Image (tube, rainbow, N blue to C red; front, top):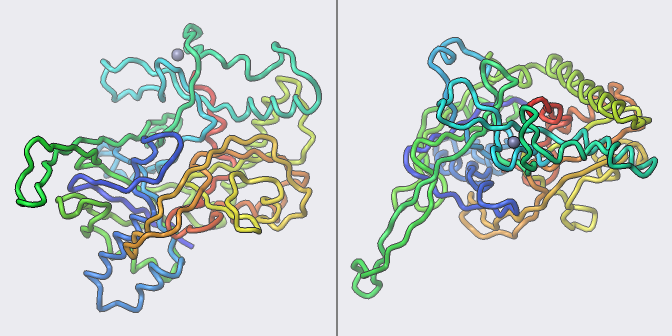
Amino acid sequence: MKYLYLEMMAEEPLAIRADHAASGAKTTKLLTGSAVLGSLASLHRQRYSEQRTEFPELFLQEQVYFPQLLPASYEISEQALSENRFFHSVLPVPRTAQSCKRFGGFHKLKEESPTIPARHGVRDMLLDWATFSLLQQKRDISKKENPLEAHKECGYKDGCTEVLDHYTGYYRRHYVDAKLRTAMEVKSSLEMHTGINREQGTVEDSILYSREVIARGSIFSGMIKVPDHLEEQLLQFHDQRTYIGTGRTRGLGKVRIAVSRTDGANHGSMYGPREQTLKLFREKLLKFDDALRGVCSTFKAETPAAFYFALTLHSPAILLDEYLRYRGSIDAATLAELTGSTPKTFELLYQNAGVQRIAGWNELWGTPRQQDYAIETGSVFLFSSQQKLDDQMLLALYRFEEEGIGHRQAEGFGRVCVSDPFHLEREQM
Ligand SMILES: [Zn+2]
């Protein structure tokens, strides 16, 4: 399995059929995996019709996992580009993130205009919830001991008394200093259209309507997971144009594609050779376990389990139980089944999850399909394990991240991150 970096730049405004997330319109400003797959498939049909035999492998047999493309309009200096620096992927903010209700958002970067008011930073609450959950298993907690109590107020520079609020969206780490993070947003614009009189075929008086579209120039990016033997076939899409989304007859939807390998310096070490990524993966897991124990000990909460880790969804996941009903969470039994461990190995300590409806449309065939329900992007599940992090456990969890979980992974569903470092970043306040 290899990773390829995929980017689409809107040369014309885009209108994407939205999947319905409970958290509002904001989450629909991405290019769904299904739309990405459909648009590349239609490009392939038009441009590479002589290579017809590879079409099923690329688009029909779920061998290639196309990603959801997330907003990535990000100012990178020419110098950084020429130095081939390490660029980070765009990721969803986990549901455990909070920020100031009044001045919410990641801290300002140096390059940002001085006229923008200071933002009070984003902090993650997962470790506090973990501590709370572990304390609660033992005894009633007084207000003073409660790890959640201290974070009711923003407290930025010891002065802000605004309440904390949920913080959602997408972010990317800064290419110079990975501790700095920036929110990734999509610019939308309104397009005005005139209504047409059906009988006369002319403009109808006083019928004027608008639709919201993604602005020209917006960039979206993600990682394709591809088996080694299909890599070249996908690289041929580099610098081609195709159409994505709806409204193509109105001049919408033209994008320029960029595809590149990730084993160069550009995209960071998590996409490198396996020995290397496995080592980094282990370090990441141990760091999380360590940090959790650290926070717990300051609140005198016991940490009896052999190992603690979190699963954070980096895209919606469609999971079915044995009766083919949709799952709304990942519980300990499901996890044991997915990792091939004995049933009592894991315990779910905390979860913050939501469910979203996935629109019933097959972009590849242009036909309706059954609606699905998925566990939302950014959902977090915290587990304790009775088994310590030995090689077997390490590989099982590594496979989770590498292969993903659940159904429709070819359309970008089911991407999981184990012990996402985002949860350890609490210094921003
Ligand atoms: Zn504040």
